[in-house]
Image (cartoon, rainbow, N blue to C red; front, side, top):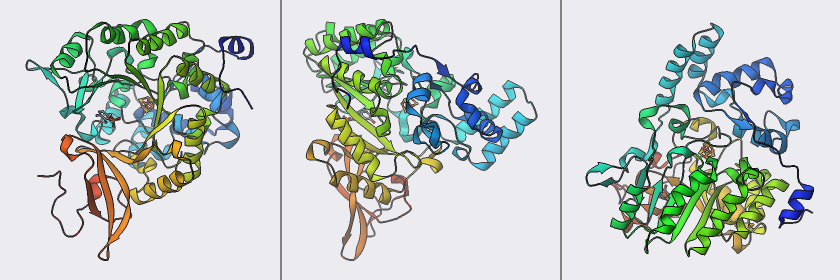
Length: 442
Ligand SMILES: *Cc1c(COP(=O)(O)O)cnc(C)c1O
Ligand code: SF4
């Protein structure tokens, strides 16, 4: 068994510390592992990768993917586009263009069209733009009372791209949809005027793709300004899973850990909202060492993931992931339902099944892992948790509640929907007992 806590000494003497190398459509065929795939599979990657963002890196390829288990290996599916992720008619449109040797512009235009059909801004993201003196703040989102999301303009990419991800606008250059804000001044002014906001959540993309120097230019002003109502700075990131060397070996890794320590010393809580989709991502020396180093700074790591067909749709996978997270000192936080966009037909798990998976996993772990809440849909009215399936007066119903609501009064209120074994999202549900509307609809 490997040690859980690494010191800089054991790191330097025992670990291989590679440099980051991305693989995209441009160079993935150079990977020696591609020799295992048929020409048809390689072509499918090229077709689907035109529509869904495709990027992986040397750590994912060399340390995470099990090449003896492709094509169904969950990490392979998580990074490499698969044929069935596009509807057959969409696949054929791109495939036909590629086979005919069409020009880049033509292919891009068709890919953009398909992306728009796949619904790039679900759950009303464009409706939550806050304003200062009538001026819309494009790099922010304030949907829930106590938390403001902030999208640093330089953090709109990731060390690798998840094939299920719906945040394409940031990655694929549909500029008018891009959320970004260059200045912190408006955020600070906004926080002064909105003392109800206790949390700022840096998100993206992955904000830890930024150089520490740039990240510090976003975080430092929050520490240097008198903001008594600000309690927590959160950073949403997949770096611990996709590039743990960000914390161990990148040129500015030490500065990053130092910045984290500074937040803790300032008296604010630093919460790393870490995305882990599969227990394999917690199994490498590098990931464990990075988790240990981050925790030593005083930051707390909370974990979240969507539930995804082909990747983690079995209770044992979740139970193992939560157990391992607790053992490594992380706090399981959310299990999400795959949202109604992108390759949802490929990844979605019906709500009834999602609840079964959640419950079976929850039952088999200790109370320390039962901090996790789910399955939760981040829908337009709020985050809706499926509490379970029950029977009331002979009617089978879903019992639900809102974990977060556009209206803070909605939070915690249980409600009922007709049972529907095929429903995959809130929009598919009807109120139970012949009701016309859910309490949050008007
Ligand atoms: C999930 C989420 C948050 C944070 O909610 P918590 O329940 O406090 O973690 C904030 N804003 C938006 C838009 C969210 O989806
Ligand atoms: S790391 Fe997060 S933002 Fe980046 S592709 Fe994956 S889910 Fe999307």
